[in-house]
Image (cartoon, rainbow, N blue to C red; front, side, top):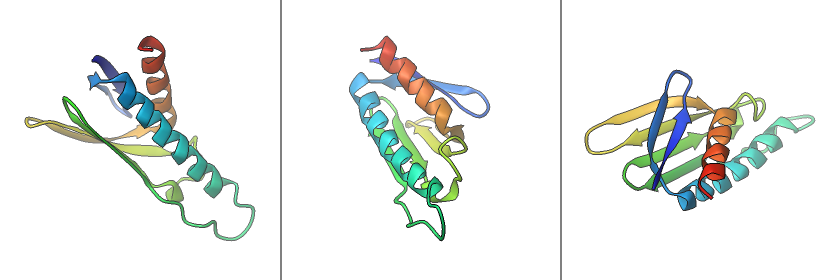
Length: 112
């Protein structure tokens, strides 16, 4: 496995992550983007509530990424809650969705 580096609002975190897990995360993010676009493009009235994204992966570390699409005005403004933990440490912080997508795409380009 190679290292996935996620750039956070302040700092970054790297951990072992497989290309297959990265593709699974990319698919979950694609579904989240559709939900965010549905909320952002609702012309009038209140948009139908969208399901939050809650991606989880257990490998060398446990990774969870959560985002509620109903609270962000656009995909470009959206942030995700990132939790990385193992038996010794737990990190929970925010990351910009657009930056997460860039980091994931870079990882997949380098590991396909």
